Length: 284
Image (cartoon, rainbow, N blue to C red; front, side):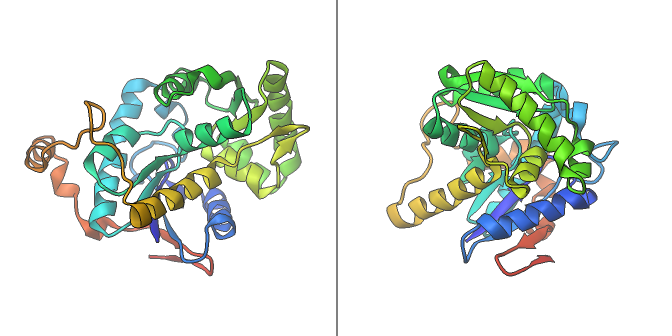
């Protein structure tokens, strides 16, 4: 099984995060599963991490095309699934309408797993403006009634990177924010961004007292494995009914993508990334 992981970061530019992700994949992916890490184009952001460049609807929507394009490339290149590894699930619904392989979102997977572990989901994140989008997404996934407090932690992306060298200060700040969410009624916690989630998983933070902390990256990866299995063994695939799910005619997709200067980028040779298996991680 081969899974395309798509980050919202330019992941090769942040080696501490990249290395933590590859180590985590080796830990949680089952034998025989290859996960290939892909980041955004190096020219996407004027800084290493997107930060506020993804906390505005219009700016985030400009980035959506990279996720959609890469899902199409992944299917053409023979991947079995795509894992969108960012909690806003950028491009998730659109990508699902264009490819027949499973497309899994970090946010959707972690919300559903959280809903099976507790009754009131709390999110601890470091990009506060995303909370409107996260609540809207939860409603779309049928889980709006289970989503409780969203707490913005006193943590930033670069704090997380530093935390891989000195973890306790970041852990303490996360725990303080999680306890605030728990005080507001949360009984299961979802880390709000991929880097924070992988940091917590790396350092074994899976529970705060009686309250579980979801490993959202692992939840998404395991959901990808499960949906590939369901497709292979049971023939179960995504619905094609309705405006949000129907697959548009292929000729219309090609013509309009060409009109908007997207179609020329659909080349399987663009399948660059960092391949991670149980045994090793090498440039592919």
